[in-house]
Length: 156
Image (cartoon, rainbow, N blue to C red; front, side, top):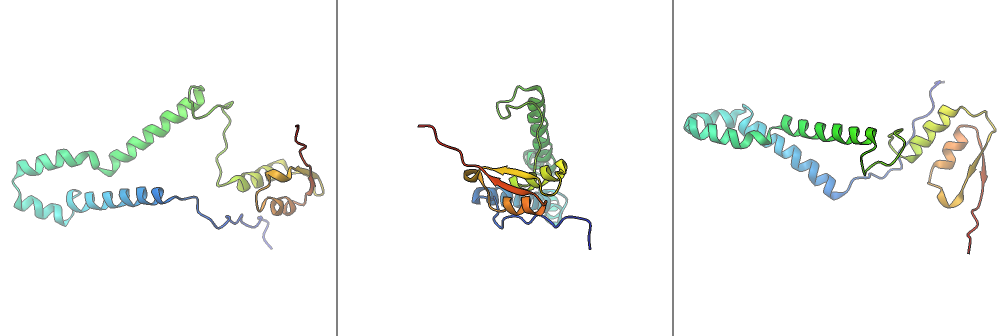
């Protein structure tokens, strides 16, 4: 038997919108077109033979802004800027004390949290029923913990 816990199985639903899909498709297509026509591919070599050099120079100047590495550098700079804003506390995106944990999902972070806390088997975990997410109870049971459901009374 393995000493590793079983893998956390995603809920079977992608958090990917149609706009995300088309954004990725656009950038993959743009990279392919750039490589084929201007990245030294066969078409680029053919165009070099049939077009005058000054026309190719103008085309290269216009198309250089679409080079895949320039877009990667742009996004890396944007990520670095957002990260620095978060660390300095000047970002409107993040209002916290600077401690951020990024994970696949709430369930994966909950599993990580319970693993890090190393509660003894049989410990009681308080769960608020209106805030449950499918699979959370299974994660608690996997760690050998007992669930204690607590209702929140509404104040009217």
